[in-house]
Image (tube, rainbow, N blue to C red; front, side, top):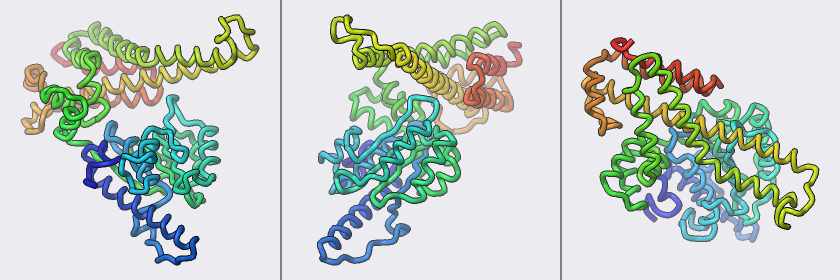
Length: 411
């Protein structure tokens, strides 16, 4: 099986990580074989120490957005369940990747944080024996969103793990994980996939043209999911064009405030588009579960309906808020890339431009402004991201940013 085959095929540009996880999966399989032989009275050679085999009960996978943290975690979970350590063809591999394997639990929150009651349920499940007699694998895709109480609940399970339980936690950086949690995990750091590798994947999987594939790979800066969206969805490319038109609109104070409002509204529209159908489906399922629908609407309205609807609406609002923040953050990262390109040209560096299609505008700005100003503009965007993450009202944070981006000659 080659480096990019089986369950590992989706891990673009992550060959070192794949090698580590493959070694661990083989060690895990060897341990199961040794235990089975011992139970049968056949005897077995002593298994390798954890430090040499690379297998451990807790992993922390980190990497920049789009590097494939969750895909890596799922692939490893599948390899642990597979008798061939990740062939990608057997039932264990397919169900693990799809999230339907009874011994693989995938946790990804749509809320702003992972609550303690959710983690306690996972901890309870982690103590159970695996159904398939291999491993109980629990994948937490948003370990950076653990509340303090949730992290405390998880800690004991990491300190005293069940014999056949493996935890796989994912976070953007190691610093995003609670110190007591990360100190008990083996760390794997993913790298940003190279543009050429991402472009090849887009052409192979989605049959897009070479030019569009290269554009999407370059514009996404190695973010696989973002590259796929840019390559296959015209509306995503249109939204990105709107974001990158913001610098040209910052001619005066009024233009700054207008541009800020349009950025925030653009993110809100993206969030609404992503949640509208899902919200309606969830509401219909709730009403059907409570007997409101399914009998021509003539069934009795249960007393708990109003409270249940209110709880669902609250959850949907929190999800919409998170999606709006995520969309706004993507827009800010696109702006960072734009001003980074301006800085590259201003300094005469040979680095590739992320926004090659905007080279004329980038060169004009680079020749008109000093590198020190461009750096301050980049700092203003990053400060806006930090402010929004700290719960500052998005519109106020973005207004402050656009004013800071206003060039001195236009003030």
